Image (cartoon, rainbow, N blue to C red):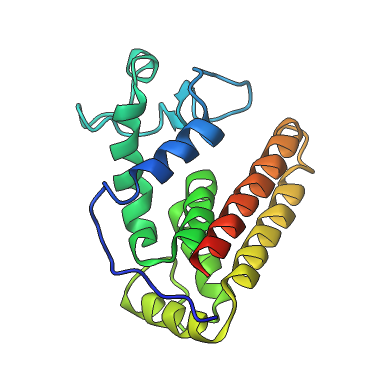
Length: 193
């Protein structure tokens, strides 16, 4: 089946329920400061290394503690959804790319996508060339294969990171999250089919 690329709808209304699900299910509402986590105080996956859009400065401890889910959604939209190009992807793929972008960074998430679709553009930026290559790839390939390749790569990288003693405590959570996101993305792929 050829999967259609969505019209690139850049409004936050289109993705707010997906962003809310990722934030609630995978980032969590609790306020944490885990030893070994370089981000400092964290809530909804937003940490003290992030810029507070209301002040233009790094988040303070109180800024993190007072953050609401409604305040987190536009941050995720602007920080991840837009630069990752998720508005142009089938929802199933957008879920997988979005979660990796949140968990590992925008450029690595796009670079992996570019690598897996054999894009001639391997710069970690989602632009017109990557979009054209993605369209071409999805005309010829099953999206579930791409989702599985993407998730498999994540598992391998997490397992490698888990070899470092300071990161070992995060490995089980990383792997569980990856498999849960894979299952969600594959479910969405079957709905789109």
